[in-house]
Structures are given as structure tokens and as C-alpha cells.
Length: 467
Image (tube, rainbow, N blue to C red; front, top):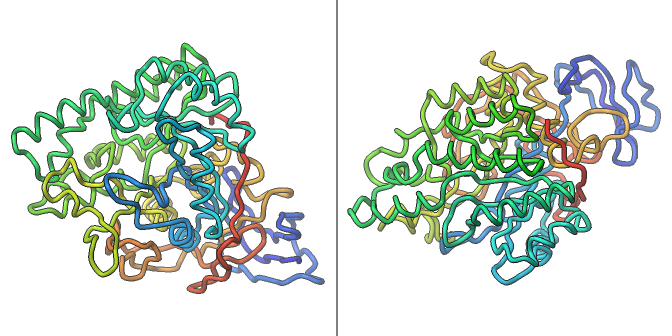
């Protein structure tokens, strides 16, 4: 099957140019001017931008947490991603206590089986750092997994100590595995939580007091220091504030193998959103928590100056009003205390349009930088480049046809995520995908979803890069 996309403007992380793109057997085979159309389905992209499909390196689909499970499974989450222009994501598989890392990956493969509609990979989070588990890091490449997550937070659940973190870094370095950290001080959070709860401070706003910015900064500094000593490749996830990003800037200035990710919500949801009367602030409970408008501007600047290299979603969807109308339990589990709110904010569908409108249209970032932080840099860091993350001969034909003039109002009433609220409710955007192509197949065409469950492929990854 051959497809020819004509008359579009190709946007990569480095270049912008008018060209036709010829696709055959899932790959881009030729880019040029006035390419012949014989034997090909022709798509006229006049007035449209052709960008590499978005890659979201931080998602949680069908994940158990806090006495419930996320509202989006691999079908609903991936379908929503495709409508938003994301063609590949990397989800977090969790090691189970007493089990191997391989078992964790196999569990998540089972969750995805028969449901996938975009391409995907897995990180594995090590939560039971026995000697056997640490040694198993060396064989992750055989599973097609090139990234390992270590939690410095969630004491009593996922958190590991510095001894385990250091050992994991050494093994990851030797195996060329990207070591990812959730960098907050879990010991401090546990103590602050105990104190706040004992004092009867149970409203959602006290979630903020349990996760002060300083402990994110200090944990980030610890992780960077260990990466410097071990030589490991470090990727700090969901960086939310200047305190942690300053540490990243220093680490990169010193030439350490470190890079940082932020998430869309940190540029639009703030502490004041959690401090509203009643329970509505629970919608924005996540870890690290939302911060301030000043932090948002610091994040934008850090994306511009390359201190931060990727934007993800940390998509972790729990219904605000769960347990009714067939919905599983959600945020309401925390009505008796903020410490029981399932942490997470949905956003897998909205990342690309929100970042385009508020970044490119607002003059904060260029079109090429938009592609870099939403796709190309992610592909490099996740060990998928150049198969994914660019428009080039030989790459997978993952292409988003983007209408820079198309207007849309984001709303839970019209989104495709299986969750009952939206972080960007009412945001009016200009510019969104009108066609999403994965490996040469149209997955979304306007409002039409065009593939069946099982279309998405598992991507075996290797060779992560610090960018």
C-alpha cells in the first residue's frame, strides 16, 4: 500500500519546508517536490503542517492506585491520544512485591493485549529492590525495555532508599538503561502527612503542604549527584518548579548525563486551584503537586533554553465523581482526607493542542521546538529514534496533519478520555490535528476513528540518549 501526502509543510525539530511525503509498507520512503502519484492514495495537505506524531513518555493506563484503578485502559487512553496527535506512548509497568521486573512487564503486556490502537512501550518501576531485582536490570534490554523508574517518594509503597537507587544507577549505566526518578523526599512527605492528618487538616489544599517545593529540589539534587558519581543516564520525570529545575540546570552545565521532563498541567494548574472551598481541589492532586504561575513561566523559559527537554502528561485519570453510573471509584475516596485522594490528572489527549496553542501561537516556542519537546527529544531519550520522532526516509510513517487555523474549545463533554473532567475545560485553542497517521495507516480522520483494537504495536527500545 502506497500513500502520497502532497502540498503540506513538513516540520521537524530542525527544519521547515514544503514537500510531498511518500509512504510505503509502513515507512516513509521518499520526501520531495512534485512526487508522482501513480498507484498511491493521495492525501492533499494544502494549508496543513506535517509533523512527526507526538510521543508521550509518561502515562499510567489501567493502573491500580489508592484502592482503585485508573479510568482509562489501553483502549480508551490510546484512542484519546490518537485524537490529540499522539502516536506512541511509554507506560509505566510496576514491579510487584516479591516478583521480578520481567513479571511486571508481562503484567502490563497482558493489560495491553488486544486493546492497543497506537504504538507503545514500557518502562519498569522497581519497587522491591532486592539483590535479584537489581541484577535483573542487566537483562531489561532483552524485553525491549530501555528505561527503569525509581521512586524517591511514596514511602511504604513504591519508595526505595538511596542505597538501592545508587546500586540501580550502577547497573543501569552498565546495561545502557535510562534511569528515571520521581524526585521528592518521601521520608519528609511521610512525616508531614502524619502531622497534618493528626492536626485534622484534611481538605485537599493540605496536599500542597505535604509536598513542599524544597523537598522536590533536594531530592532532584540527590539524584543528579548520584548520576554524576555513577555516570548513569538520568531522566527526572514531572519536574514542577524552579527549585528542582535549577538543580537540573546546574547538572547539565557541569556536563552530567542528566535531562528533565515536565508535564503540561504544571503550566496551567496552580496552588490556588487546589485551595478553592469544598472538594473540587481534589481534581488537581498529583505528585509533585501543582505549583505557581511564576513556576509556569520558569518552565516555559526552561523549555526554550533547553534545560528541560520533553513535555509529557503523567496521564493518570481518576473520575472526580466515581462510584456512580457504572464508574469505578475515583477522587471521592479522599473526601475523608486529602491523603486518600488517588493522585493524578488526565491529559493524554490534550498535550499537543494545548502546548501548540499556548507555546507556538503565544510566541513562547518555535514550531521546531514544539516538535522537539513533544516528539523528537522524547524518541531519542526513549531509544526509539530515528524509527520514531521525525519525518525522514526510513522512519515509521507516524505523521500528524495539523491545521494551524482550526479552532476548538476543550471540554470533558467532547473529549475522548474515559474520565469525567478535563484539566483544560473551556480553553479555546487554535491549531489541532485533523488526521493522525501511524505506520502509514490513518487512525483518526477528523472526527472518525479508523482502526480496530489490536492495531498498536509494542516498540522494542534500546540505546537511550541524553539530549
